[in-house]
Length: 155
Image (cartoon, rainbow, N blue to C red; front, side):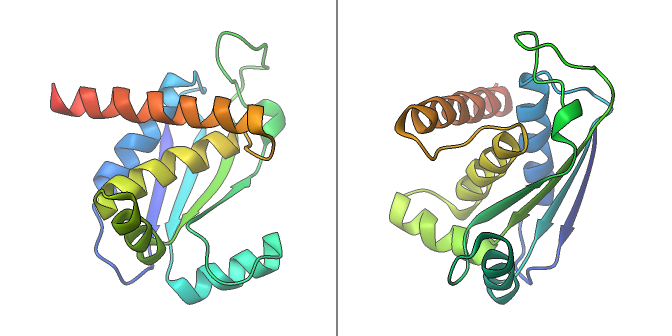
C-alpha cells in the first residue's frame, strides 16, 4: 500500500507511527494493497481554512478526509468490489488541535493522532457518524482497529 505523508504543521510528530496505524487500519479493512493514500499534517490556520472552505465550519478541526475514488475501494470480504487499486484520498490532520483534545481525553497527543488517522481512514472508506447507529458502528470499528494495532505493537 502506498501511503505518502507530509508534515507541514511545524509540530514534531512520529510520522512512522501514523503511517503504521493507517496501514494497519486499511489492511484490516481489506483495502486493496495497491491502493494509495495521502496524509497531510497542517497548522491550525490552514486547517481552519480547509474546514471553512470544504465543510462550512468555523475554526480548525482535528481531522478532515477527502475521498478520491470511492467507487473502486475494496471494502473487504463482506462487500463486492471491482478489486482494482484505488486512489483512496487524503487525510488532513492538525497536530495542535489533536494535542488539545488529548489533554481533555486523558491520553497522549500521539494516541490522539493515531485515533484521528484511523477515523479519517474510515471516512475515506465510506463510514460516517451523522446518525446514532452509524456513530456506534464507526466508533466501535475505530476502537477495534486501534486496539489491534496497539496489541501488535506491544507484542
